Image 1 (cartoon, helix red, strand yellow):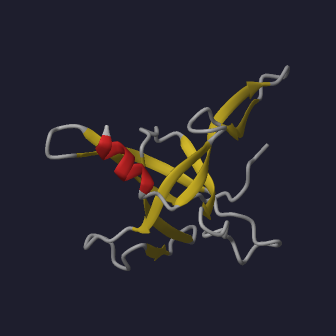
Image 2 (cartoon, rainbow, N blue to C red; image 1 turned 60 degrees about the vertical axis):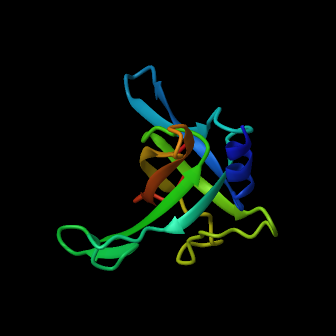
Length: 148
């Protein structure tokens, strides 16, 4: 599969994938926690992240909404070789070249990595009908923590 090797060599970033783990306490309370997933190598996958360019967004990859609650939305496009469900979270996006953390929260103490929610995956098909990679639209999570 030469095409897959060429495509995977194109990935210049790595990201950590988390899945939701739901527990039930003795009192009946449901607790949600994020745990490193089984995708990739211990939750770490090779990928590329780019800004989302679309004419349907007012400010391209970022927009602000004012209403009952202020929302600062950031949309990105992630390309990888795995089909990811919309129930995962992505964080710790780093450059494979120098290990630089690419998306952080400068407003929070210690500048932690930004957490993103996945919106779903779309396959990218080559001219012969084979799936080469997947594109996942991700957006900045409202709550920036592991919640555990």
